[in-house]
Amino acid sequence: MLQPTWGAWSDADVHAIRESILSNTTYHRLTRPAENMTVNVSLSLLTVNFLDVRTQTLSTTGWLTVEWQDDRLSWNAATYPDVDHVYTLDSEVWKPELFIDNSVADVSVLQDSNVMFKVLRDGVVEWKLPRIFTTFCDVDVTFYPFDTQNCVIEITSWAYTIDEISLRATRDSVHKEDLKPHGEWTVLSSSTELRELHETKVNGYTEIYSQLDFFIKMQRKSNYYITSVLLPVILTSYLNIFVFLLPTDSGEKVGFILTVLLALAVLLTLVSDSIPSTSINTSVLSVYLAVTLCLGVVCCFLTVLVIRINFKEQDTPISDGWRLIYDKLLVPCSCWNKRFYKSARRKEYLSSVDLKDETVVMEYDGEKKESSPEPEPSDELKWTHVATVMDHFFLVVMGIVTTMSSFLNNIYDSVICRRSIKSDVTNPGLISARENTIDRPLYMMTEKINVFPTSKHIL
Image (cartoon, rainbow, N blue to C red; front, side, top):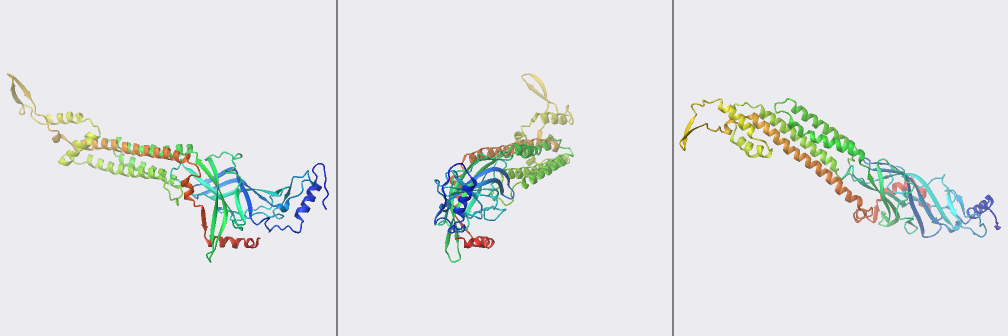
């Protein structure tokens, strides 16, 4: 018979309570307290360690707070008014078997023999389990490096079905008051979602397990990537068009464009190393790099074409097709001043003829005027003139294409990505992407049972 005591807290009272509630022969730690148990779970974050985009792995540090009601562990407050709680070990009381369903590091039931359980006088058991959570995160790199990732930590009841244990969220979001800032990621928001996990047996029987998901929405801090990735890529892309500023007879034109192509290839390799190769989404930055690389190849081809035309034999006649392209396309589109070549070719033409024999005497209003025939520009056009104007034409065209590709890439990254950031984690698109019920394959459950065979015998 327990005797009532009054006064301050004493270890004798705590010892007496432990003896009365834990040494009772009717208490067994493998027997759950009630037929239908409700387990309240909350997640508190301390740090975001890293998000490995290539392996799609999220590592966080925090603790789980798990609470449930066990009336067998309660005691009379009037008997021990100065003791409102006692502590027990994992091996002394019943606890729910919980499992992180998307863990990639530790595939075991959540437990720690060194962590104590806090038992309140009304029978409420509080279990705070510190842990490093290493989980799978489905990474979307479309807007890299301005991406926003939605990761989840899935807590599932392992041995007990939903009729035996039902998980509930203590709060509607992840506790972030103690979260330390991270150098690469910013936690924007979080939410919780209760779902059901369906497992189909060989005989067609389906068991349903309770699952609680903690969603964490994070945005990448892009300042570092702007200076180390985007800026070099954009500046290198403009080096493609500078090849057309070199003289047409320069022997360094081909070497210059090949060096730019090599630099772009190196940048593409560096960016590709940080993007998961198994991602179903293609990064806009990767597409932009590929387009820039293609433009570099086009510039290389056009440079070779210009050099070939420039070094053609000058006495080789220029066909009517080339004259038409020169007059109707190259000169107008490149905004080229044609007077320079007209005056130069006129001097060249007039020096090769006898002006005296070609002088025409005209009489107009009783006056005599001498007039020289205008030289035909088509007769004066040289291959060097065509090559020079082609260089200027390609400079204008490739400059416009490069500027538009860079501008559209920045607009797509900034505007579309900003819209996705404003959407909440539990938006309809995100929820529809994850069904409310999950079918767990039988072979997965079988492998896990083999690891923990004793879980079959838990009552």
